Image (cartoon, rainbow, N blue to C red; front, top):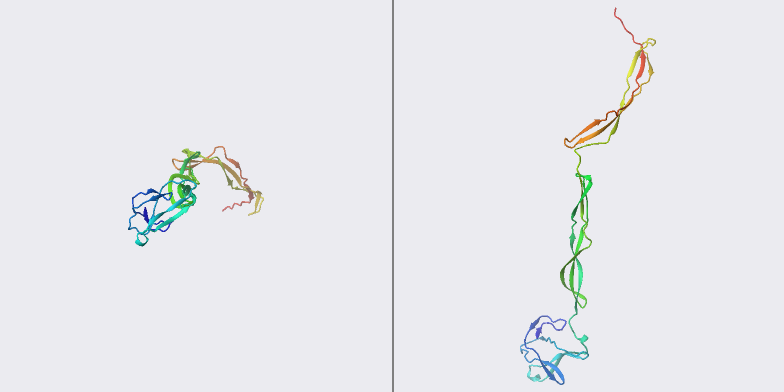
Length: 264
């Protein structure tokens, strides 16, 4: 038995227990009654009486009480409060409490980094493939009152990743570089300029020059390779023996009259 600050079963407010006396069963006018003669006379306001008892299916249920007021003029007046119900499903009971489960976002999952050896690459050759962050969700047990969430939730230990994070990939070569390395042969072509060959021709006039053959530049093709020495950190150019191919120049030939002056 309690006093309550609320005014209805849907809004009881604060409950304060006022007695520990249990009800007794009494048979009145062919009906069973639950009786308590020990309610303190100083109690004011609304009183909540909680009763657990059996009933027969299919029969009406009466919820209420007979009481005698504490004033002399109405001392013997009998009052009935509460309501009678034709069946159980009409009783003003509390909401039906059920539970379901919901997933809630908890945090982002940053990608980890995995090591990816590359046996066909040298040790100093590296690169990274970026991954993607994932999302972590946690499962909660949720309370429902008549199918409507009450806001009461209980966190569980069950989680899931959706989507799962994609790790970063760090690729690196595992093959050691040689101490020295020589490139494949390369070709270099150089131009060879022609020379002028002058001969004396007494048949020409003084200062006259006659070109017999026009000169042409020649070409020389060289083949060589380059060696890089890792220890010395130097490069060496290697000329390949027997790889010189020469297209010789054609010299220009000309004639002129040369005079010799004698001093007597």
